[in-house]
Length: 218
Image 1 (cartoon, one colour):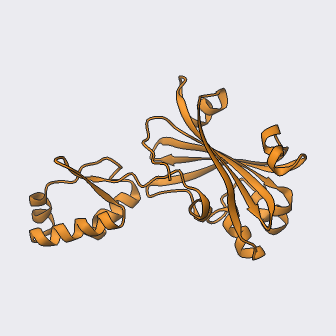
Image 2: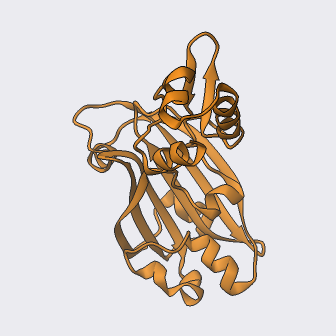
Image 3: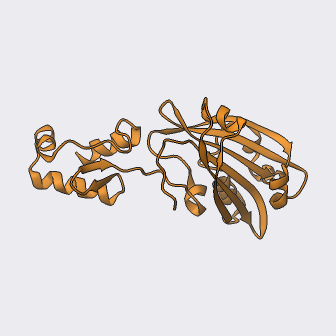
């Protein structure tokens, strides 16, 4: 039962907020005792897949976080989500990026994260050109497995860390609406991160989160 539910949540068939059937229905479906059902649910709660709401039942947990630090470097997607790379190009660093990365050319990578048919996040990163000597894949509009930061760590032997993170909100821009597939203006959450290695800024990132998809800040 636990493996079945875990797989459905990972695939996105069971979505955050979906309510589990009552214990009696699960007992019948999986031919289990009530104690076995309770143990399976307790296991999935401990793993972060399920959450109880007093007097309401057991629900699929929202496992998406505003990932930061080592979590974000290891990967940004959750079960049922896919990354779609839109662009990778050499550009001149925008003013706010240049404040961290320095003026001049950098690699701009653009992607979206989808849950089913919905875009839940539109992200961009601006990476120092020196990183391309270690991770040449950043110049291609394709994923680095799991992220360019993790690949850089592995190949260079130098640790990558998030030096700072800011969380803000704004009304959608034209670019936001196009990236997120929105027809109207909404308030969106914007997270900016600065990545450093060996005392040097090697990249900055910006993630814009779509409205209507509950998030928890960590």
